[in-house]
Image (cartoon, rainbow, N blue to C red; front, side, top):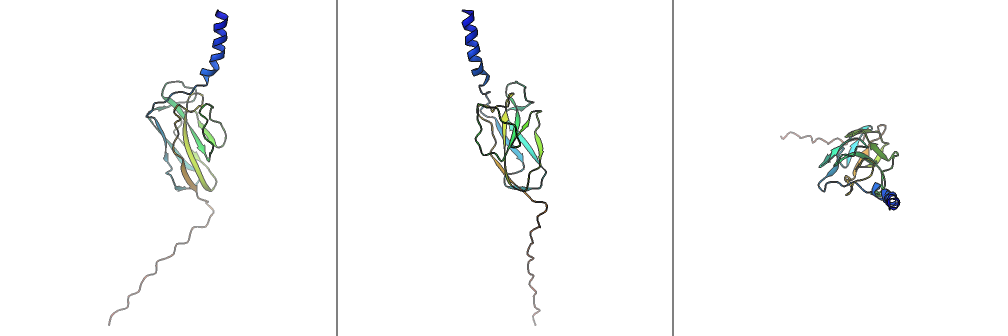
Length: 158
């Protein structure tokens, strides 16, 4: 009997180990800065916002706590059952950071925050910000020429 209990525990353990961590229904993650549509010069600061939960380091299993992940130019949907990947498009802030400096090439980019649990998995429900679009300005590009307003010269009456 004990033998079957151990077998059953061994079979069920992987199922519970991969379950999503629950998040409060009122929790919200968002990008404070830059604003959507903003033009920026690289490097620029990205500030992370979180309401309804707390920020901690990766590996910490305290309830209602997580750490930020910043997705840069990611179009693929978030897999709720897998840890967020680590690469140049998926930046992890496992020390509990709430802002970072990004150095991106000139052009249009999207930024999105996702809150991860102790194992870098998305919470349930997934806590992800709306995507923020930014345009990084080329520092070597010529400045746009502004047309000067023509001043009207008034002729004296008389």
